[in-house]
Image (tube, rainbow, N blue to C red; front, top):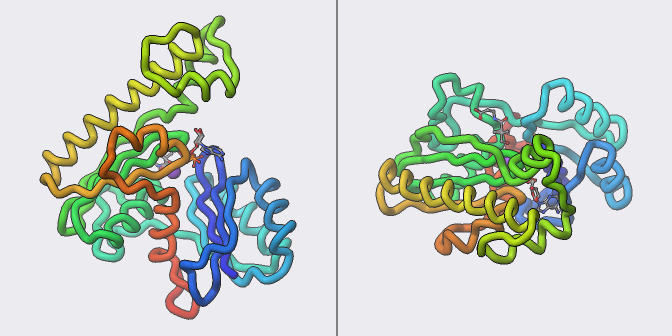
Length: 255
Ligand SMILES: Nc1ncnc2c1ncn2[C@@H]1O[C@H](COP(=O)(O)OP(=O)(O)OP(=O)(O)O)[C@@H](O)[C@H]1O
Ligand SMILES: CC(C)(CO)[C@@H](O)C(=O)NCCC(=O)O
Ligand SMILES: [K+]
């Protein structure tokens, strides 16, 4: 069994796939930190993991600690996705290709590998990122802005009277009518910012890449915008599609 990890800024997304048929997903989840991940794996996969591949946007030190813990706890080696100027027909659009977030790069490579034509990839996590790929696989770059968790937390942190809990936040999101409580006003205000961002990205994508753009939505908050982009493919596992390309199984080629 192969362990796959997407180590984001707030959460570690994990899944376990079959060695011989990686399209067979045996388990998966979201862990808040290394300890939670190791605990979840220990409960179900104390034995049987043969190998790990991972992508991380954390510091090298944090990633090294996790790799060491996996080696100690499960006797597995990890392949770690590394930056590259080109991969699987996609060319990295950054002036310094090493600086493009690896989660973005893998999502771009994953998306293009699925459709082989122009794509817009929107990843809605702690940060929101957009990336543009033109028809022939040239990545044109993209945008980064704060995601929902950052937007609402900044408002909470920098004001005295914006206070509400997760249940109220969740309830407030069901409509975009002018808010009649703090939770509604903030949650809907942030959602409208998100909607504005998404609609601008769609316009830009058509300008930059033509009308035939395939839109991908990924990240923990993808569902919040899905209704505004009915034609989009909502793919929570898009980064893992790219990860499999960047880090093929050791028998095939090393990362
Ligand atoms: N089961 C879940 N656990 C935690 N967050 C979730 C869950 N389902 C949806 N979310 C949402 O996902 C968001 C976090 O997204 P994601 O997991 O993509 O972030 P991340 O990987 O830490 O961030 P980034 O991709 O910017 O590094 C949170 O805002 C939260 O609302
Ligand atoms: C933007 C995030 C935080 C999104 O997870 C990540 O891709 C990252 O740390 N990127 C590095 C900066 C960049 O992509 O330009
Ligand atoms: K991400």
